[in-house]
Image 1 (cartoon, rainbow, N blue to C red):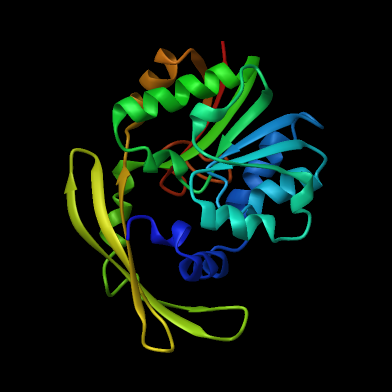
Image 2: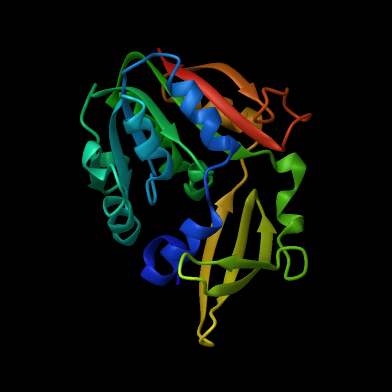
Length: 245
């Protein structure tokens, strides 16, 4: 299944257990919180981990995601009534409706085709007010993160809320043209194995800057790590902060 951890109810539970709150959430929450009480788009909100925290912090939040199973999980969480949940893509965003937009957990990399990425940025520019801010993360291809996605180094055990242990591992199939194709394997205690395949796009800093410029954004800064390190000296990330011109 493509993107199974977002679309299959059983894998959605695994995703939630494997991806608790961490320093990337702290970073995005702080970025949005630079201006209190803003209108926020969380595009690719998934199961709502950060979305709900943004709403709890006093922002007016819209969580948008194409995966209905992920949104079902988000809507079932405490505080979900504070958020406007929308099933869809950036195309559904109304004009000039938000002050800040975020794409977290490397959502930007799931927008593999350049045309799709350009349309998404154009939609975000349309949905933001003039001067509205955009923040997102994308892995630095120079870090070659995919080399650690193999059945040995990626092997892990995930404990679900009910106590069931799921064994998981990842294998990469192809790396070409900035695209990495891979499959996550999930083996449940009852013997069922579910697969989730995906392709991620690893764009260079130059490619990201060029695409943002074409969409009408001005880049404010790009960090290389969650502690504000420069590119190449942090966590193998591009943490992009930009604003609509």
